[in-house]
Length: 298
Image 1 (tube, rainbow, N blue to C red):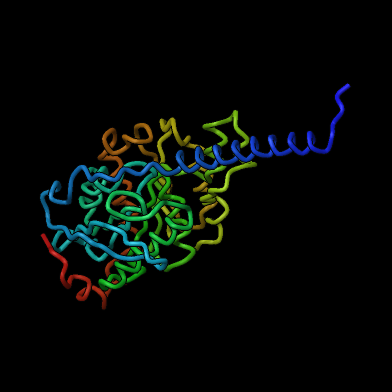
Image 2 (cartoon, helix red, strand yellow; image 1 turned 90 degrees about the horizontal axis):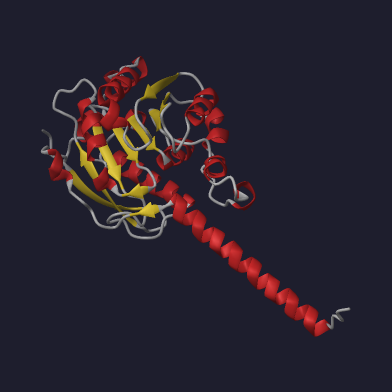
């Protein structure tokens, strides 16, 4: 029979406490690494699209310097008063999304893409609240350039979907586009890692599903039935949770090749949404002139 002295019991407890702490820290590292996969080096710059563009550096409320690219819409575009604020997915940086900027510009809008803290030339380390502050700062940059908040459409791709839904709670926007995104991190984490107690231990939330019912904003949900990373039912649930006016558009291809696989269909969905009455140019009289100041035009 083992005789447990106070010292042995204390040593045993400390060892198990250290083991549990190590497991917890490993899970925290694993969670952060799965959600955020930044790439520091830019693979290209805005010149790759062969059109005018502007490089932007701006700061968040907590003093983090971010980096972005602005591409003005084509001159005399019927949707030149609209700007798509793009919040990208969890991997890479803004230089890996040239095909997306190109198709958005084909839709006739201005495009502003930026990197979250820790991605590309943006400094810092990414976090959930950090990405929210980053999106707020990008929105503020556009407003400072004279763009009306109601003419800014926030597009969230994958992880970016969770960012733009929270952005819509904090600032005025003209619309939301949720592309290939999830209902929440715990939901998608439990599906991807069913062998882990994700729902118990997850600290990163991006809970779009619970936030959408409170938003009164035009929404487009774009998702592919062939998406093997974030299944189509996430898009269906987000669409059901969103208030009218809303639109569901089915994409082609897997999670990371929807534009490559079905570019024409992707563009058609964008144009149908952006052509709705609530996005018409009559809403933008006033900021239209000031928004072009110091911004190159094609």
